[in-house]
Amino acid sequence: MKQMKAFLVAGMLLVGTLASAASLPSEIELDPTTLQFEKLLKSPSFEIEKDIAAMVTFMLNQEGEVVVLSVDTEMKVVELYVKSRLNYKKLDAELETGKTYKLPVLLRSEI
Image 1 (cartoon, rainbow, N blue to C red):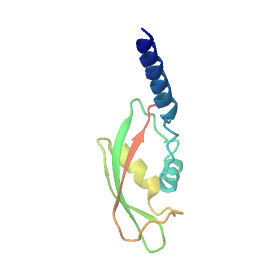
Image 2 (image 1 turned 45 degrees about the vertical axis):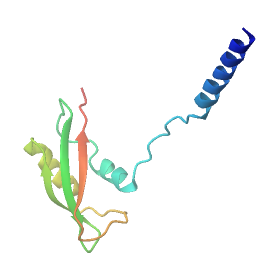
Image 3 (image 1 turned 180 degrees about the horizontal axis):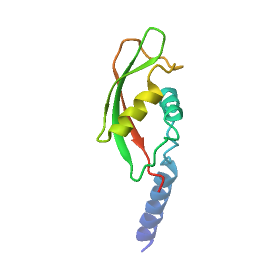
C-alpha cells in the first residue's frame, strides 16, 4: 500500500513538473512588412459581407516602392482596391529590389 502511495505521489509530481514546464504560446510577432501592408489596406471603401481572401504577388522597384504584379481573388473590386492601395507606395522594409514576393491577404467581414 505504501508503495502504491509513493508511485501516486511520484506520478503527481511528474505531471506537475511537466505542466509547469510547458510554455504557453506567446503572441505572434508580425513582420514589419506585414504591418505596413495591413495599415495600407485598412478601411476599404466598399462593404465586405464575408471574409475575402486574395494572394498578392508584388516586387519592389529601385525606389523601394511596391509594384503589384497580380492579385488572385474572385472579386474584381478587391483586385482594384489592393492595386490602388499598394501600387507605388514606399515600404520601410528590408526586401530585395526586383525579387518577386507573395503575400496572402484576408479582408475580414464587418458584419
